[in-house]
Amino acid sequence: MPKFNENYFHLKESYLFSEIAHRVSAYTEKNPDKKVIRLGIGDVTLPLGSEIISQLHEGVDALASTETFKGYGPEQGYEFLRTAIVNYYRKNNVTINPNEVFVSDGAKSDTGNITDLFDKDNIVLIPDPVYPVYVDTNMMNGRNIIYIDANEENDFLPMPDFNVHVDIIYICSPNNPTGAAYNKEQLKIWIDYALENNAIILYDSAYECFITDETLPRSIYAVEGAKKCAIEFCSLSKTAGFTGTRCGYTIVPDDLIFLSSTGAKISVNAMWNRRQTTKFNGVSYIVQKGAAAVFSPEGMAQCKANIKYYQENAKLIMNGLTKKNISCYGGVNSPYIWFKCPNHMDSWDFFDYLLNNAQIVGTPGAGFGKNGQKFFRLTSFGTHNNTIEAMERIDKLF
Ligand SMILES: *Cc1c(COP(=O)(O)O)cnc(C)c1O
Image (cartoon, rainbow, N blue to C red; front, side, top):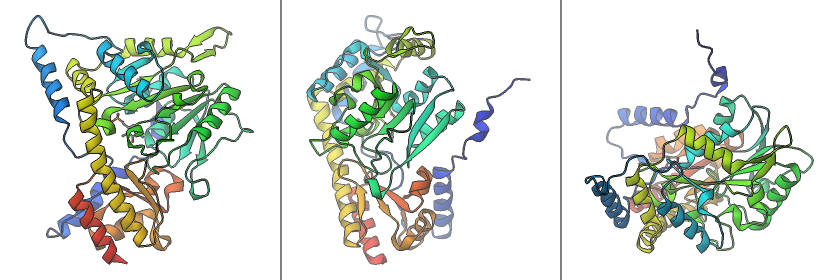
């Protein structure tokens, strides 16, 4: 009989979005005449920009003739896309080399797969509340996790405790679900901590394109010392609406060198390259053509227009909540608006209240960790009209 990885049985039931779907369908069955507005899920709704679409078509056409046909591509991604990503970083004053860029099918896979490189015996630090992937993938490997509280007292931006040693640190900035974003000085403290502890930072910058405050870093490499201690994960999902198209990239700097148990030098870049070339056969040429278009002037302008549309929704939501004396977080450098449920309500109670009384679907904060228990997340990924209508309903509610 095969012996299974029984760490899977220690995973918490991932019931957040299925429970939401269950409660919404129960409600709509009983109330078929009511219009439900969904501001819950973290998925984009606007179509891809026309420049991306046209390059996707070119990618398809290339496969139609022998001269331009593509079979297996480089596991790390085509040179044309890796160079486009390097140039994108350069515009943000960050210098990276193409060999440090690994193109993938998304940041969810990479943030999960990176755990392959680490022994079970590591202390992992994860903020709470958090994107559930970091917790679950480490649980699958049976690793010890220490949580660090992100709450109103620290503006949802926890800082390291220099008296406690950890080996692996997860940071998501701008954050899902809180929308909070670290500034350079704060990231410098995390980097100093990592360098002092020989720890590695796994930095998720999936929402960098939502940063409006020019002083905030879009990449951890904008801060000195980061290349010696951090891997950065990014994705075209939120930047360019690629949630269904699938493309992301991970930066593993050459300077990321640690010592093995025998004292030999370990290049994390070489290790990740070995992992990817063994277990991954690259992203399709078609998708990479579309992805490269994201970084062209026209493509980027179209992506920015979509992001602006969502940012206007975020403003509508923040204004509406503020009017009801609810102080909200996020929304400025993030598509997510995070706020404390009114009247000390628990997040699932507030979910039911909002669904039953205003027919609005949001995400209960409890689904992201214990510090989310009394909080709620609304997203700006809806349409303008629905967002306006949702805020009108909330205005009448209490
Ligand atoms: C949406 C999201 C991603 C993107 O994941 P993909 O697999 O690239 O779609 C990564 N990290 C966080 C925190 C996210 O919310």
